[in-house]
Length: 44
Image (tube, rainbow, N blue to C red):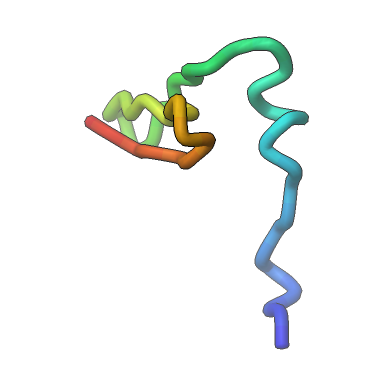
């Protein structure tokens, strides 16, 4: 059961035509990337 505070979004919406996006969380930058194998990797 999904919590009402949870949010679901398609990756293609946030990536659009990019392969890497930068997410800023609590002042820290993280890179979310799509690999050649079409997997997601989050790195600091």
